[in-house]
Image (cartoon, rainbow, N blue to C red; front, side, top):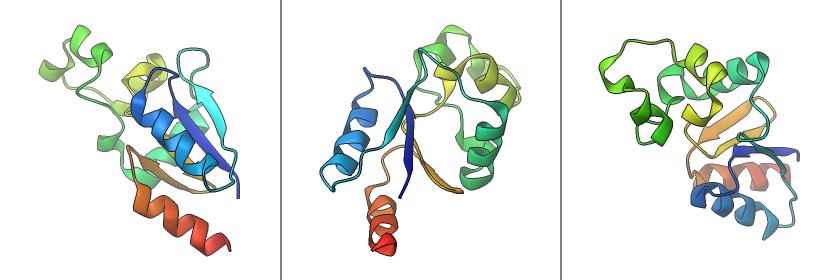
Length: 114
């Protein structure tokens, strides 16, 4: 099982996701969005799995600073331009992906792998 987690080191939910997998003997590959953005191909795969409208976090500082509540925008374009707009954690397992804490889904992935 190859798990990839996108988030930031300071994000509490991202830390919970990492701990969830480590406690179950799975070492996830972490991508810190402050250090490295997300590629268009990765973002496209995630958008297909979770829906384009779920990509942007309206509670993020980047969203509020840019005044996006009053704008029409393309979620994928905006996230590619500013990865900190992405709702985190994003957890990928092959073609499957989740956004936010999805403990039940992650547990299903682990059980299916066994």
